[in-house]
Length: 376
Image (tube, rainbow, N blue to C red; front, side):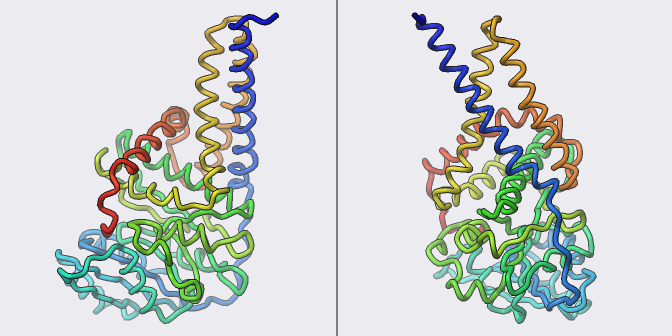
């Protein structure tokens, strides 16, 4: 007859096995294909494209980043900057660019004390002003990695493809926070690229996303999510994208790089805004997104418990080693694919604590629902 301690250890061992299997499934089925995926050949013709950037008080970012968008190697495109109630010198900066770049268009939203709005309204103004059906979105604090970015991101848009999901990383800087921000964006990209490759797209990032103008208006824009701070990217993809109408694009040169948060409070506020949309995802997507970090936490906890019992350590060490080896290989290959250098070693440490950090941010959102109508 089994003792209470033996039954407890058996239960923990079963949890370890199941969580390890779930982890290996995610790494092999969803994450590893990001390395093996072959991007389809681009069509010979290049359709006209509208690039849309919304900006509020982004004077410095526009001055530093807009030229790299305006100087893309592409025959026919316009860049629409929506200057949304800016109170800095954005108007003057954009005016100077207008004299040098004839394909730049400015849409201005003036401040009205009787009317407050979020970023989606500015996005709608930009989409409305676009003359082309192919739309490419990025932010004022983003910079394309090369002058081939526009061509690569829009090369897959055709009669069958409505969405192209790109990679929006962050500039490499010194400090542990910067490494975590870059790690976090890489892990999220592993998830949404891998799920899209497996024909289950669930989100994209507005820092690097393409879709069709006609699709936006056919589906009445952002619809039920128009009131939310976020969701102009991930919720639109979650509700309208499918395995048949979505492609991914993350070859080198097709990424964008953004200015990372400078301190923990700024990162925390940004992360809170990003996670406000998660509760609105499709039920199946929510299960898939919760199962991986939950199994990760159970794997770590059960490993620690079992390692305290010496007679089990060889088996536990073997299971732990298999998962660790798989993790290192996938992280290394993905980091190379997404041009993220110097993250692999740190990612092993971040991997343990990131689920807990996300829980803290998510709970903070639940406890504080204020600021729903902020711009960004």
